[in-house]
Image 1 (cartoon, rainbow, N blue to C red):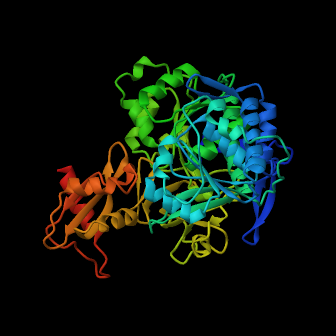
Image 2: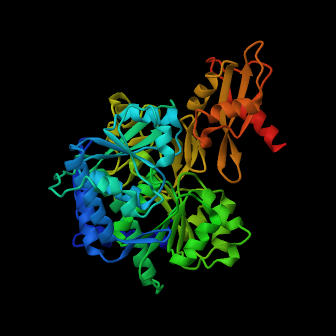
Image 3: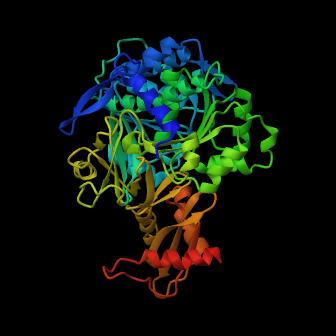
Length: 559
């Protein structure tokens, strides 16, 4: 049944995007059809940065420790980076330029400067170990990588030039070696269809694939989130709720993730929103910053809000400035949704999107989320269409379970250097095949019921089972290995493994875990690892029967 909130949201979006509205719609041809786009959006990221940094020039933008920078200061610094890249390093339009670092003001300025120089901002996962970084770099062949000190050590021996920067220093000192190469000069003019970003995503095969997006795709994804933000602001004004002098949000998710890049970082330019940076997650530090900086919007993986809910010193901090506690990357248990509503001042929200969709997908808002806490919400207006697909890519009957398809102008261009993978992930009519299984109810609300791909989502981080299994098989004692996810109260699910050793071999679970830690990022290492004295069970296809193992060892954990 359509709620009053649904009706008000739909009417507000219609006013915002209708003829004469600030986000009036146009169209773009893709997949042989006209897809809606927001006509007022700048065509490229450099144009987007220039417009909104001029509009908000003297407003505070970045807060990082004691450093506070305005939109104008950040844009001026990014311009110097772009000039250094073009006239100092000789970067050409389309060159991939990597960033391997934790969150910092310098990271943001480097990202902006790369795309302003015509480069493709290539966001390397800062948690990767040396072998994973080498694989990602081999996949997309960046011309240059900017790295902070911890990542520089992991990049030793990788065949790519590396420019180190001190992310802990104030911006001018952090990038002094970069600024030294800037001597003015013109910057290239980019087009909407030029390449802008590469983010990495782990498919079920375990390969680190680079998801390439154009300027239009990233900017349109950003403006779709802006439409949602303006909609909720409009409703708040209608309800007589006071508005903050300046919106503010924590940047508590790594910037190499699409959730941090698009709806958090990039959307902030259009809103004139202050970004308060956290280099690493800590629940109490987050609450301290919320109080000090009057944060109005919080978004992170579900674990983050759960840790704040459960923190023994929660009541010592004033969190009343927050209007919404949003989450993405994984679902929240129903009880967590209800506790958020009852115990924290802001309303709970949930979103659903992927790296390949530039985070755009679905949203479940406030009272509707409480009414349907198991749903990830309706398709995000005004750009998104959903489809539920069978194995052949055909639409299934309404209410039936199938693979979730997302279509919008914000969907990515494709996997870098992998045309076959790209072709396989889109249907003929332009729906991106997410690998998640779900259904739509009569109100258009999406419910995710399972994953088609062999992927574990630990606290919002995607883990390929095959990648972890491959790492296990690299140990000479392992003859069979199965990796699967088991439910976890804090993280949603955690990777676990069952291993059968080769005859005559001896190794302990702790030794295998330590071995994996030398080759994989810590979040991929199994939370539990069991040794099976018997060969692992097999299906009729001769594949290892993970369903049986999950049930057997899941009962062991619960017991």
